[in-house]
Length: 261
Length: 304
Image (cartoon, rainbow over the protein chains, first blue to last red):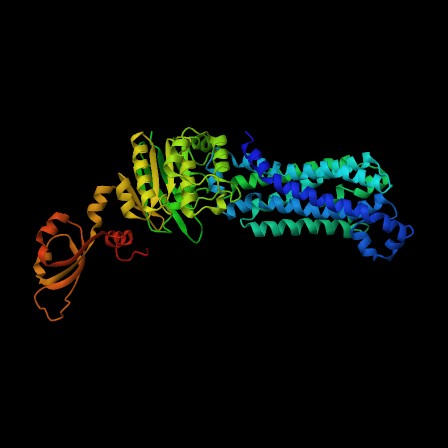
């Protein structure tokens, strides 16, 4: 049991470390530039100059405090969009790339069910998702201390915790694309396209009569602003994301079982 | 119990009927050659046997287990070795890492012995492997868990002649230990050296299943002769000569010919005894290409 998980974890280790270092640099840079923003502009002076569409798109509430600045610059942009797309793209390769490169036969010739193979390969995405969310909170908390803008450690920790089900939900979108499409390039494009489209749907429709449509987007259930600015934690949203992930994973497994490879 | 029982196995892709109602039984402990030109449907059959693609109708049993039942087939796979026609391994991994994964999942009782025999470069990443090295690693993963049944799709492609011979000897040794071997090929010579029985597939249909000796007797050889002195026509007026084409180097000779090519299906000794050996410039006797066998036995309308 778990041989494929162990193998994939080893395979993903290097990439996960690079990803974490990259996000660490992004985080440090955001925190480092914040004081010059704060000193140059009074309150939300800069934000007032932004086009309102952009403010709505990225759900920017304020950049007058470090929390608001990070919620937008780091978490909406870095976590919701960048990491969401990254895990969707990675998951899209799981099956499609193995088939595309003619490697799936050698795997399935072994005594393993398709369901287990898919489950273990998907679970291995827990490494990049876990590593980045364990390593970055200390950077944020220490960084905030260094620029003398202390931030609630509990809020930061919970924010990262809540981002885990969000990222798995994005990954499960990629996984489904991966079993539906045979060619890796197609699966990857579809995963990126769908994930980004869901983000846009959720952002653009908020506050309109079609707001309900945005409920299908994982982004609806993970709100960095609410956590950092209001200290409100949406655990129900997290549960919805867990259920979404489980549903998409099961659907992918069923599809994969019936698929001619 | 037969190692493989194929029962009405059909795969219909809509535009192509890749396998059409195949019926075939492979007994335990035999080396069975599955022969056919590229595109005949060999790989389709093999991939159905391993559960990679689902039959449109019909079924098969490998080691007594129905291929349509995933759980049963997984049990069977513990005792099956498989080598694909184009084995693919994780390009980033080294050969050692690949073997470790295979060993963890299905066990490893003899990789040491196999590595001495086939010698893939284990320390290097797969992306640096040549086609032949991938094939060697594939052979190790196929046999490392000491399977009862091995299914090999074009196993010698990519192997150099020395390695092909070593592989042939190894396969006969496996057969003697009681292992059942089912392998596909489009090379008649290779099948002749290794198999006891062959099945020939053409256009998705199994056209014949015969012991190799019977097939070879029928298939014939391509003979080419070149002589200093004209050879009388009646030298080749014996049973088993067909498709005779003659010519004369000088152009003027009327009785006989100095060059000829024909297909011969009789006893090669009888033919040689009739030839005027002292005047021959050249004589070649080659196995007829598989395509010719099809042409000869299954009619000129062959689309192979």
